[in-house]
Length: 158
Image 1 (tube, one colour):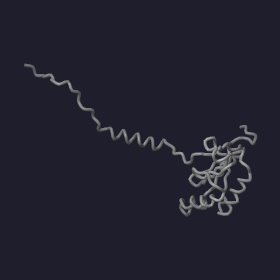
Image 2 (cartoon, helix red, strand yellow):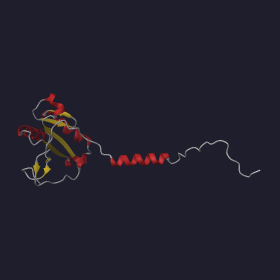
Image 3 (cartoon, rainbow, N blue to C red):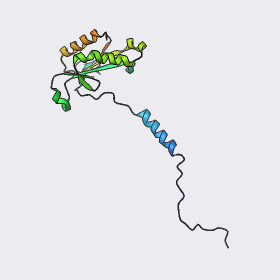
């Protein structure tokens, strides 16, 4: 008679899953912190011009972006002339006032005076369109305008 008996079944013990929720939440937290969300899908060509005196904007949450340029290759059905894009849709000059009003409505009242309108304009866009955009911005009293550029010299070199 022996003191030790062998198990008759060769089953493996069940896997301990007690730490599984901790691992899942740790991965979820990591991806929430590390992932950036795309704000706008560009439907236009946006080759920004170069500038040599560039300043970085401090608070990106207080910036309203207006894009202008020719429709990209996937959107040639909209023509070849420079167009305006507000958020994810093409728009006309007349839609700018409603866009500014909607952006102001989303912000707290004390932040409205600090809102800046950033124009991301393709370097080949005509100045007539830019002039029309600026006229509409004046009508709605959006007078803080920023032109977004690439850093470099006017000739396009660093």
